[in-house]
Image 1 (cartoon, rainbow, N blue to C red):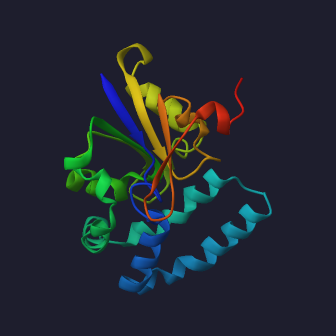
Image 2: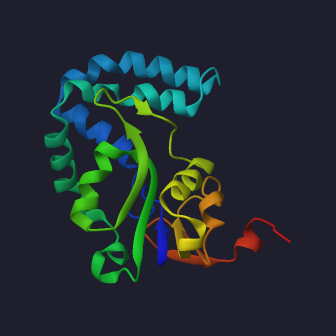
Length: 198
């Protein structure tokens, strides 16, 4: 089977969905401001390298435990779905589409239903917003992809991401690599040239 891999944040949409959802919820459900001191302490610990980014994310989304999550997520995508880049809409996709993202499952499952892409691999969270397993980032993206697809069963044609720094692992899987710029422009590049592979 042939497929294409897409990062999500700043690739399929022009924003970081997790951060934007937090801001959206702060305005819509102002009582979650009670979680901000805890989040700030964790952010400081992250900056000081006392905790990892995954550990930070394990607690950042704890505010969802006091939200009507499905209602909040639907309202969020009602507002922001129109910002999905046109080239990712179902009528413009060429092949089976696999989105691999560090963003939370409770947030992206709804947009998967709306956009109709075939596979979603993302960071899993429990009902309290705590990460289950690892943050789906860097090498973890490839590990999770290989849990779903055996190498012999798929050919990865195109890989799209905004991040050359963090998405080298998934770029290595594709025949063609596209760096997505601000505004959604897709720039084809040679993996071996960017990553200095001989």
